[in-house]
Length: 104
Image (cartoon, rainbow, N blue to C red; front, top):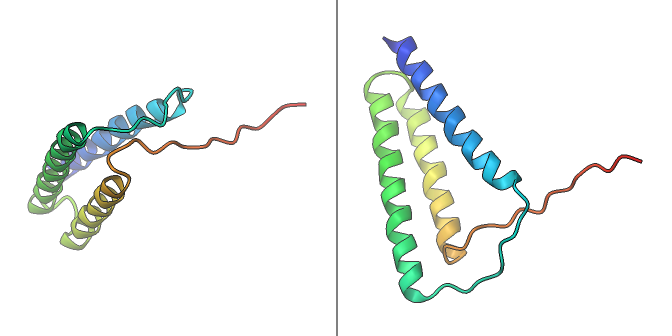
């Protein structure tokens, strides 16, 4: 049972990570757009909902014994720190600057 939950957790992490990686790897066509207060509020609500769902998910893994309470607390703290960073950035997407190797 624990192995199955561990595999499910690993699959979730891979799928979620892969979808984020694909989005980040795509050529950036984002503009430095200013969001309205209404848009910021909508994004804030969505981000808070996501954060709460992540907390619930991690707590389930702790309850099922898949991860330790300490590990769960560290994961939750990381997600909360990420939320604070997004909030400080006024809910705009962070633009990554990729450095590509050039072949000569």
